[in-house]
Amino acid sequence: MSITIDENRLLSEIEALASFSDAEPPAVTRIVFTPTDLKARAWLKARCEEAGLTVCQDAVGNTFARWNGSNPSAPVVGAGSHIDAIPNAGKYDGVVGVLGGLEAIRSLRQSGFHPTHPIELLIFTAEEPTRFGIGCLGSRLLSGTLSADAARKLKDNDGATIDEVRREAGFGGELEEVKLPNGYYKAFVELHIEQGPLLERQTIPLGIVTKIAAPASLRVLIEGAGGHAGAVLMPDRHDALCAAAELILVVENAASTTGASDTVASVGICEVFPGAVNSIPSRVRLSVDVRDTDLQRRDGVVRTIEAACDSISDKRQVSIQSELLNADAPADCAPAIIEALSQSCRKHELNFIPMVSRAYHDSLFMARIAPVAMLFIPCRNGYSHRPDEYAAPEDIVRGALVLAETLAALSK
Ligand code: GLV
Ligand code: MN
Ligand code: MN
Image (cartoon, rainbow, N blue to C red):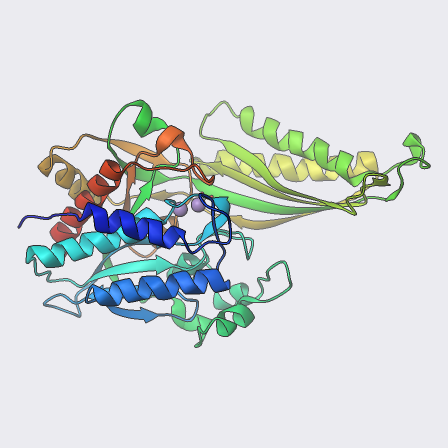
């Protein structure tokens, strides 16, 4: 069996998918269940059907494109990722795993390979937290990490619930039906750009992920007292933004003083109300994102931040409410799939290193119900979540080739 990845087809599809965007090129913004996302989904579904795959979608819009093996009831060998993109993102995050996965499956079909196990491409709904505040919505529901009841309580910034927006987008059925049965997967493999600089720095074409770091996030609402920026004297103020500023520095300090470079924390959203030049900020909303490969250390940082909310609130006489949106455990990748990926690299004489994923991925949640592993390719300067995110064609092709080889080995 000789596998040939069609580079031109794959690259032109990556460009085509990037054209479904609510931002000016080269930036890509594709928020789940927006008209743009729905157009991108329709385009992608047509590509999967064109490739001879049978497409079905669940109640939250997770999309499965299936190639039945000679034993259709055998556990599935899956590949996939996401196509939603945060505001002002690039064109490769998630997309390389989806279109690279599709190309891997097409290349196997064209090579004359016949799988025993079904091979399925899975396009997850809302890996990014942009709309509903938590990431990996689709894979949390598939794995049962998030219950249907808890999902129904999530709202977007306009107050719309998941049930409202998914039904409006054409995805009916009940959220209870999204969870996959135990044993559904034999294996799941996610191809992704590294989103960090290590492969590029070491000029190594591939990374095999052995562990995915544990993410947590909090939403913090600070309410102080507004007023006239000229008339209210300094001793009388309860400035919500000044309290937020103190808290943001606590977040930075808590992560940088654990003594481990694996601990990271960021405040990515700071909304100030009323946002007028001559008005004291009365209300601030912050989002806090904390990650670590070590769960205890990550939780220690979260506790420090929560304690700081109380002490800053006392000191400044402002109200600070923090809500822990998610605090997930890390995941270990499955040795058997790591080995299958390693063998595929060796077969094609491609150098690789084991890696930790500091970004989260749907595989973090799929690991709760299936043996998973991830394959990373380099991206320029390690840039991701920005418009100049870039992966070189030869790296994308190598990733798709190793993925194809691995899907073949696992589905025999
Ligand atoms: C995924 O997009 C992440 O934030 O790690
Ligand atoms: Mn992302
Ligand atoms: Mn991603």
